[in-house]
Image 1 (cartoon, one colour):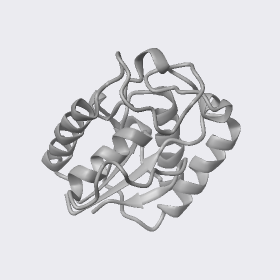
Image 2 (image 1 turned 60 degrees about the vertical axis):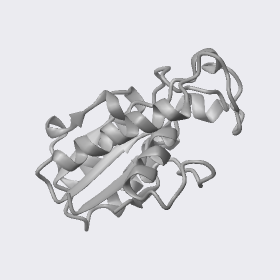
Image 3 (image 1 turned 135 degrees about the vertical axis):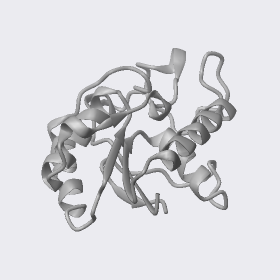
Length: 168
């Protein structure tokens, strides 16, 4: 892997309502679909060799739209649960609060970072130069930290919906 790009999924129905979705399935909102189109257009000049995606619906939808925009077969998408969003446990379906602190039943930051490291190692094993990951905010920040340890997981800026970011 020479270059690693990251895109957080487009705006989902639950994002739009300001609700924790984490591991809860929620489709893209029409605005999220359009955001994914724009992200794909931004990636047209990048020679993406491989797209790796979280298995969650909103991430897969975003990856499929991007793939269509860049002429990449959606049948070649690689899914891995290592890139699934953080498990917010009992907070899922409740009003989103940016600093949730420690809550029983929520995936710990330590566990999230361990999973992100395993995901990063998985990506490094792939025989491609330019890899695009389409996933979620928390795991994206953790993945960014694994790729560049000088950027802390917390505090660190989040990713906008369908924002294209070059991690390495």
